[in-house]
Image (cartoon, rainbow, N blue to C red; front, side, top):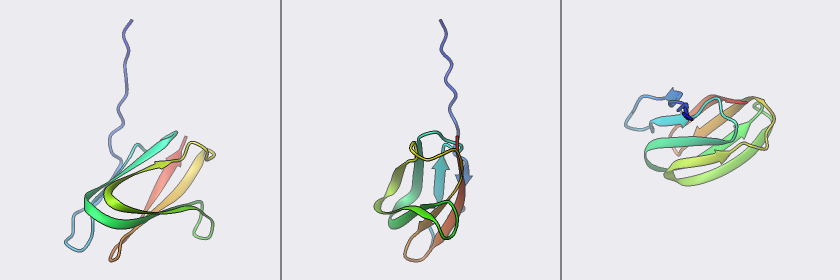
Length: 96
């Protein structure tokens, strides 16, 4: 029996800027764990929301990566906000 595994490539990439951090978020869409990777370690806050007023989680990381477990969420579109001391980025995330 042959087993074939599909590897999803990173979906979002941002350009590197001196004052900002580069971000890779994958896989998107996802069913469970969302990976966030930065080009360098920084202190950053991750907010997952349905809209600008309804926040589902708000966590702080001191690293160059984060894993966000979204298994318990319903299928749909979510907003992921990454914020450091001098930069803020918004991403659309699809939960399957």
